[in-house]
Length: 75
Image (tube, rainbow, N blue to C red; front, top):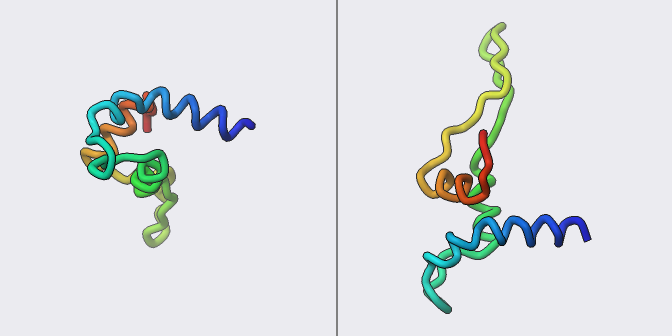
């Protein structure tokens, strides 16, 4: 039940993204596509030689930024 509740809230926040999308077969976004798109944003710990760089965050592209803003999520 918790996962359905979270998905419902996420869909509420994404409503503007869905509204600006096409209709029917022309739709670009679904909940699953948004999750797949956001999987590219990563936080990693990197070791270069003896230097440890922690919490290195990948730079989101324009679509990912749009989705993160709609979800009111900060990196």
